[in-house]
Length: 87
Image 1 (cartoon, rainbow, N blue to C red):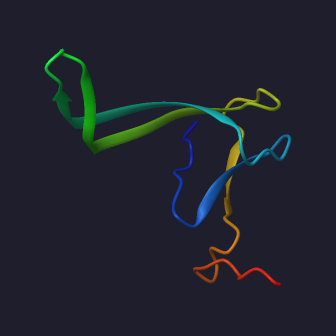
Image 2 (cartoon, rainbow, N blue to C red):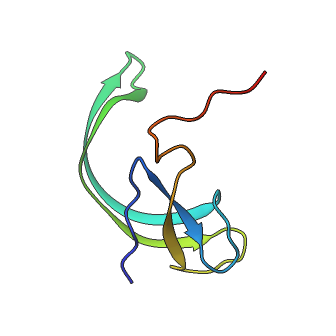
């Protein structure tokens, strides 16, 4: 099953339980990373460039359903900004 890709205007939702916040995602990524090593030999990733990425599966953490996700709109995505809070 193809997993729908996320965008800035969408998020995942489990079709079985309605979960919007907790998912285990299995993905394959091809990246180029800039590693900085200190004098003791410890490394730190300072820059990452994603060359390609494929989401293979998504499992809902609440009901354990596999690949049962759909794309839904994020709050405030329709107008491009969230509404200001009322005092």
